[in-house]
Length: 335
Image (cartoon, rainbow, N blue to C red; front, side):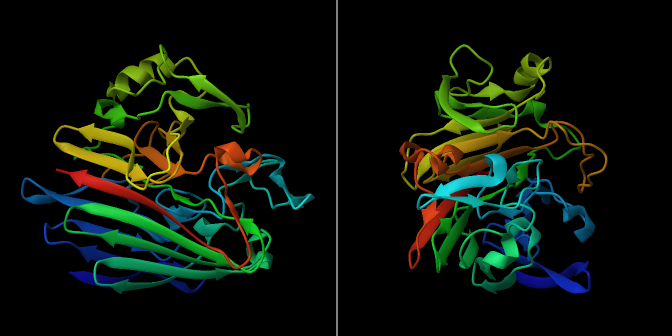
């Protein structure tokens, strides 16, 4: 089953919803707005169960990141500035003095050209430097592939006509419960012994902190409810952290999230994983079957370590003129 339907309109522009289904009855839906992952349903006990936070109408996706593709650069760029060829580049900011998730005109704010080919939902976009404020024009393709092994693979491909930055991710939030229950009953595993020390503005300093003997240690499965108890006296009231994976293999396991018989394994060729447990969600957000509140979902955002923008030992997010770069993240679902 494949389907393309009108989801809504923004300022008169049609926003489309694309759906594909595999032989096991798993359904994947994405939106042209923000190249967003809008739904992932799996058959459980004779009915389809939603595994991600999904909103019912287009207005709920305006000004938010849930499910969206984010870029050109995921995460935060301090002061909205970086050095390129010995020159300081200034970017548009959207979180005080910080450029967050590609800035005010990033991937998540754009309407993409979409199509379905077999088991793939394909989004394409030409983005000029005058449109999003990053140097160079960039051509981006984002492909969501649903296979019969119950994998959703997101492939990001980009080329540019001048040196720029490219470090995309997807901001999907998972909640594996059938009922309106938060993620406290989920177990999380992140095979990382280190996380980045962050400034008060959530900018990584480059210092790596050991997770041992702390509630940040998920090298063995940890019940999120127990972590929330330990974190409730902190400003974050949960996780909003960057784990260093120190690996560059496409099939590297970045995280496992499970609840009962349902599990999602996240694999990536990236060397960092941002984990955010929706600590500040409130009733201004609307989800199907879930009341928005703190800890109603968890984002596991695979990306190149944000510190790479100033320290090459953490990777390279520069995209050179004429170069094509591809990044992948794979989500394997068990149910």
